[in-house]
Image 1 (cartoon, rainbow, N blue to C red):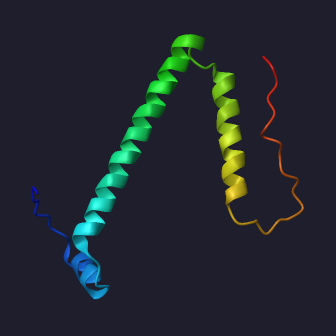
Image 2 (image 1 turned 180 degrees about the vertical axis):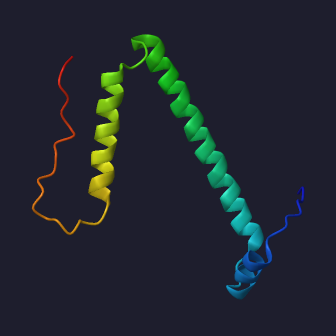
Length: 97
């Protein structure tokens, strides 16, 4: 099995040792997760390129709608704000253009 030597900053090395973690297993899991993340990004970019080839570039209105939609999702993921009397906006419907 090929071997690789890695270096950790002192604070990270101390944390790994103090928790009695297996650095080799952690590194393998982290590398596999990063490779998978990059594969998913590549697949999403390919899919997006296919969609753009089929339908053309999104309009400024489409981009604004998408940004608003994502902001609505992010707002729902955050803890509730102190102001509870604001009615949430409906970000799930889109007008036909």
